[in-house]
Image (cartoon, rainbow, N blue to C red; front, side, top):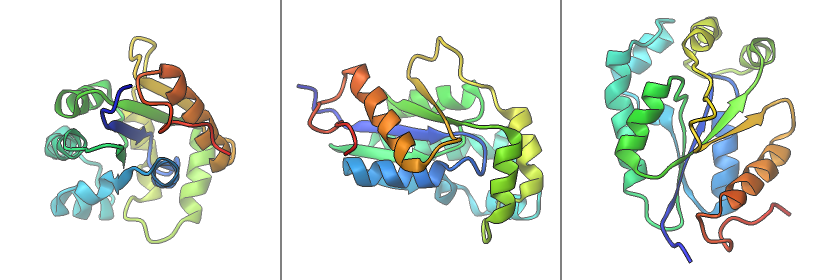
Length: 181
């Protein structure tokens, strides 16, 4: 039986439902959850509030903080909501965190744009969504630690699919990864 902590990243463009999904998985699996947005440096948050897209120089320290947070996980584990848009970003997290699973919330620009325009109080401006899609490098088959989930379904169904996929990997104790009820 493998008792190593589960380290999950719920990833995708802004507005795809990362925080909602990470919260749901955290509750289902008893994992400590953090929104990666909370680990941004205040200057990066100020940029995004102003409608300015971040550059890689802004992201590297943030990705290191996310990787470090996951690396320090104790059983049962941790889950982080983080865009992880580029392969280089995912690799940076992998280097810092150790074994990790990414859950890629995949959806169309139109669906996510509609969702973003309906939410209030988030510093990520809807007009930055195009830059998110431009930066997105869809995980490729050789990234075997990525599970892709289509977001055009209810969160409860996404959680069921995520749990089934995590169980199928077989590298975590079955008592922690059980099919949703």
